[in-house]
Image (cartoon, rainbow, N blue to C red; front, side, top):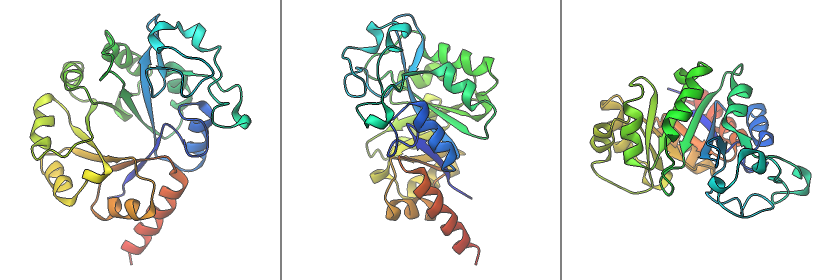
Length: 248
């Protein structure tokens, strides 16, 4: 089994997170998938940003759901990272979907509804993915257990992951009972036992955020199904070396 490498918010070590520059670079660096985060604007447009507030990654302040999409498009989402990326814009989910459609990439969309439980976020995102025929290579993830339940009723065949940052001895049956078919866990809680339990239950397990060579090699050795990394180029290099050594 070869561990799939998802670029965490794009190649976010080298370009401003969740921008087209970061997504393009991740693709160039050989990532197998893109991980991104989705919020809803005031006019119900799904947009890609990690935080609920635009302050950290733009030249403005305030909550995403207090802006219309047209207003958000006026903000600079690149200068905070480096002058090189001045003028980068906030990306809509639809823009990313159109970009990824003809590329051999998986897509992981984290629904950012654990702090603000946006009305109909699951349906809006699902409908866009369905319209562009991308459900078969998309995983929808969330920290919100209620959201997992809602996703279960949309389509039993879509990838649904419960996100967790805590150690929980019953996490596998708990996630399965909610309707998830995958677990996305913080790297420090990843171990062989969890991987084995997930695979016994026909569930996928992926770890976040994995950047250091030692961590990468550990994920590959215990057959973790996927990782989320800020440095896809490094992850691809170490995975390919690991797979080459394993074949000897």
